[in-house]
Length: 87
Image 1 (tube, one colour):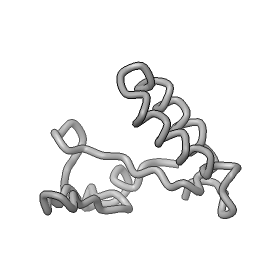
Image 2: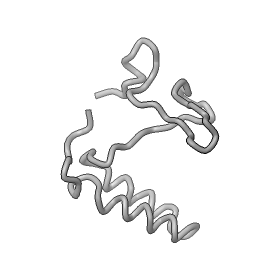
Image 3: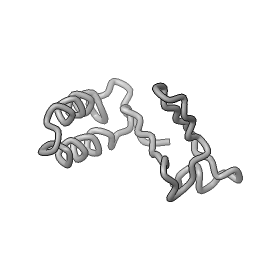
Image 4: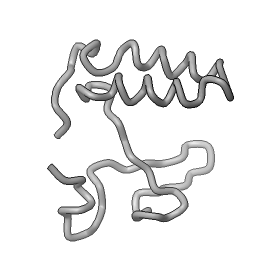
């Protein structure tokens, strides 16, 4: 499996991202650019592991934020009612 942006002639991914605070639309942001992003669906079978790792990484710097990410992890991956393989 490859990332959508690597198989689409447009070079665009499957999802769009918009900063609702600033109105910045980073849909056209490509590899290595300042606002490059990766969307992770909570139902993705691997989302819990990814979120747990992120919470572990940020935990010492911002325990409050890490706790909120752990709350997300508690509903992600195998714990999601909609769990499935990434598509």
